[in-house]
Image (tube, rainbow, N blue to C red; front, side, top):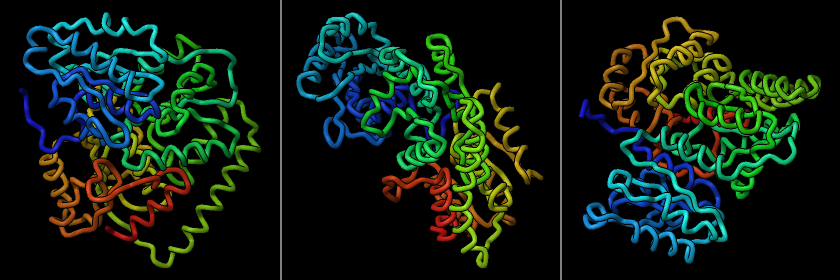
Length: 421
């Protein structure tokens, strides 16, 4: 082992695959792994092991299955899942031990080709990569299995690039992104959360455009949509947060789809008017903070642009916690350098909690607020400043449909900034 990470924010590829399948309505993940893998993966992705709101069937393999093979155990688990779990697609996800031992999972799954609903297999052994790898692997497999092209919809877009467990306001964020796109007549396939997620996957081949929110995740999905359906991708790095970013986002989407510019500008004017009437009410109490921001790229870039470009706060350092490939780091750095105020903004790519704390302590004399995950809350206390939870994990509160993006979400973001919890 090269090194250990204190309090990791991402986990193995099995977690990423469960994160995808488990957050699509009526998609059933079937885990072919040891009992420990199944339990830990379910806990880390906010799903419930063999019960709760979702249910997570598992073959629960032990030494016997690892040594002598677990195909019979898997066969029984798939059949039991089809009998008991009410779903529209079933995905067999393999853990490390069963990916290594040589079980012919594809052959077992093929025995269920006449099942009422599709059964697919995803080789998501944890040793293959992290949560982000599992996300890309699983989402691509579901798209390959379900997506069809019948008739192109000129106002339909596919949205992806945000791993569900890396955005604790994901439900509200997806609702808000769908709302602001609807202002220019655009429909969006978000895949996650909505009750028609599987139908959205099926219909995604008819989209006129993909919107990938990440500068590095999902490039395999971009390529597949292009090759299979001729769908181009708009790379929009990070969530659009606040009036400036929303205006930029709507103009870029409108331009790609050929939407009337007057319609786009009217939508932008309406959204700006809504936001600024709330901003105005706080001008007498305006606080300008010097801040540190810690979080996953897609969330952090959106929050950073809003705090600087719309609200005039001063960034000291931003720490990106996802496992960005070296050849993509320059793209993210360019996004930071494009801020209205980018003087002396330090950029780090770091996911170790101890190292993040050591970086932050360098700025303690100038720092007035820490924005990050629950892991950064003790750090804020240590340096004697305020804390705002903007990134995952969020461990001390429940979030239902709260949002930090778009127009409605940025207002909530400001409330959180002023309430200093």
